[in-house]
Image (tube, rainbow, N blue to C red; front, top):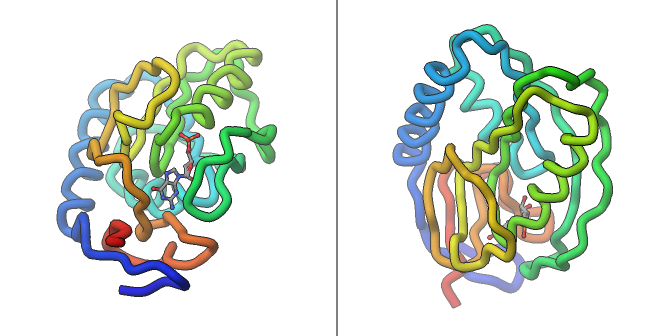
Amino acid sequence: MHIKDHTFGLFIPEKEIQEAVARLADRLNHDFRHLNPLFIGVLNGAFMFAADLLRNIHIPSELTFIKVKSYTGTQSTGTVNTLLGLDHPIQDRHLIIVEDIIDTGLTVQHLQEKLKQEKPASIHIATLLLKPEALLTPLSLTYVGFEIPNEFVVGYGLDYDGQGRNLRDIYKVSE
Ligand code: 5GP
């Protein structure tokens, strides 16, 4: 599969993604059953994961989205812009940050610090993908779908220069 100047090969098929999403949702349904959690999806990449995850959540809960950006092309810029669009009061709420992928971890760490200032009851992270070798900061990660090698992936919400978010499977760059 080609997107712009890169070739990508199938990496995680739709069925495996959906199974992992359902497993994560089961654990969240159990762990947050009395806590009315607020899911915070991180746009744009997490839109598809958040939609599928929430379809498998059966406990009282809410969902909102925020936006941050730290990537251009296939390299992390290491800089994270401020968050946009948090319109929900989060004081004393149990927050679950919904991320498509954690690479350096800087985005989610920055997000956690910002959210902590509003004194939530707790903050947890649910990420579909994690690149353990790329992590630059220690993070407490309880809900991880897949640990993957330090390579660039697209599909299932993740883009390469704006393309590929619509793909149902996840692809890995192959050259
Ligand atoms: P971090 O701050 O953890 O380095 O990067 C997190 C963000 O970088 C993710 O939310 C995602 O938007 C982007 N990102 C990191 N790795 C990849 C990747 O392999 N593919 C794509 N498409 N985006 C990535």
